[in-house]
Image (cartoon, rainbow, N blue to C red):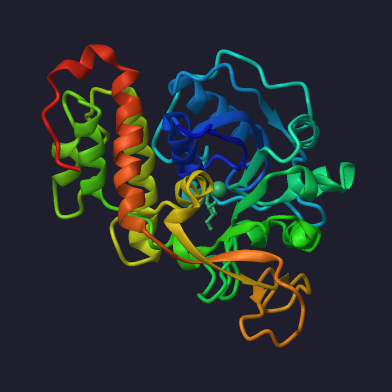
Length: 358
Ligand code: BDR
Ligand code: CA
């Protein structure tokens, strides 16, 4: 068996970030070296609390969690309670974490791990790239020290989800994103960028949550709550017996209501777990190397990730942009892995689960 991929996750937890954390913990092919937190979906301190609580639920209180710069490089803080709920995890409420945050700054954690294992570490950013931009200032050799950068961010051939041209993670801190894509042009392996082009293929529906609950052996599972009424899930708290399933169902219900309002379907795009899954197994996506610039001009295209598909600028490629994804296989793995984690974390509930065709 090949060695697990050493990953450091920088995130703004966030509903789909929390699912990415569950996916990482659930994956035998991942070694999580640390998790760092930035402001994005909610403010950094809340992100840190959410991250600690999710890792505790997942049984990984040994992983260092550090917070970084709490404001974007030059822009004011913007958060999105309408998308992720006032505390970032939708309708899910978790007990306050039992352990403190790391005393180290997120940027120092990134730099220290990269230096200690040159060429080994995959850095996965799931939020605005503020911490990575600060880390680059402290260690300009970072692109050469990492094995690879994988980021969720951008809208390369598709419209934005925050402004007509711009995706949320880039929108929050476009200056940081520009510093990062410029700096990583010299990386031995180009960064893998997953924008909305592919992450909006990772559509989770209520039925997927039922399958996950059944895979977890949850008694009861969530099929009643998820199938009741004209709009499944609406005004219903999870009835699942398994605490990880409950957390996922209650957070996703909020996300699904948001997508029903803004995207026309009762389900949710789970951007960040797809990015994490692709960091562990890049064969889940197909890519095209292209030069990417980030617009920081404060105009109508502010924060746009401009990809030079026709090589008009003559500039060398600096990002492997994901142009397609095997969303079906990703969702199968998501259910199998995260459902399996939930089952392992709740042994008393696991002995009666039925066989589920995945
Ligand atoms: C990205 O923005 C956030 O709301 C999500 O967590 C994801 O990282 C999608 O645009
Ligand atoms: Ca995120």
